[in-house]
Image (tube, rainbow, N blue to C red; front, side, top):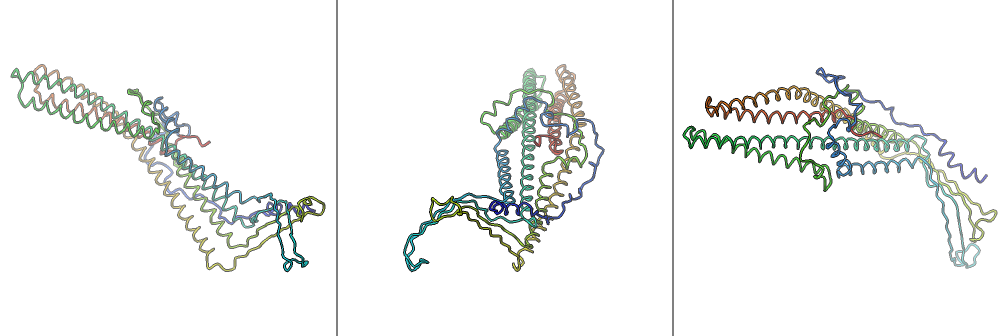
Length: 467
């Protein structure tokens, strides 16, 4: 009988199942087209088959990304946000299970004769040892379950935000390294051009002294040298700033030592990616998944708001032994128990519950709009990245051919000038064109690799595993 009394509150709590009043969740219709618009080639590796280690083919960049994932402070803060959300969910989930406390208490009290029940002055004692059930709500209408579900979805959303932060960090490190590489390639070209123009200036000075060149030729050659010097300083500035940005992302005091002075001329990332479909995008991009978890959480909030209109039943009880003497706590007949169910029915709250339901419904509508907006932004980012990689691939080929042609033209113009066939003006124009076209090729080749990184990020490629 005693044990039956002890487990009665737990039996009631666990068998009176909660009927959820939350609306049945339905994913909103995708507010974007089923395809990417322009004809997109499916050549290349499918995004779902890739992780970031496979996408990044340069071993140095691979190591830099590993360093950033281990040391970046912004990512560390985001991961700590996930831990906070997980703890908050565990706290909320604990409300769904009855608690059990063990306790012991003692009390000695002096009573004057006029307050004592027998009219005699004395000292009274009371001791108690037992188990207690803290106030526990029997979740008949799913209020506690809905709150727990909302906390779970909030945690899952935060976890997806953490995945998005990892993706963003990997992409930023990759793009910073590519930007640094492009700046240093332009710097090498500028140094080479400056040396060539200084040699050309020296030749013009010799001819000026010999009377075979004019002062105009001298000033033009001098102007090209100064132009190269100015462009070199501009490129050095860009190179140093790109280096500083990369070091910041790596998050380590010794990060600069891992950045080599010379880099491979081979591509640093995979050159062909198949984008798949927009439905694949929705299933993989962590920001879209985070927005959907937020929507599910707001859906669960409606269930909690609806349950507030219905009665609440809470249970409180104790079981143990009590005695006036400590030595008699465990004697026969010292058992004691109490069981106190409570029922509360909302009768008048000045519209509080109805306002709470309206607020929950409005927040869900807001979450729907945010979810749809996230999908639209993601779709636009992928479309832009596809357009960039598609056009930059062809532009890079044309820029390479143009740079090769300009280099050959410069060699011919130099030979003709030095042989006295052409004047200095044509040679000067060939120098300008060659430098501009070589720099443009470096710029476009860098942009194409940056665009590939941006495409992989926009497609929600397997940067980190979900496990």
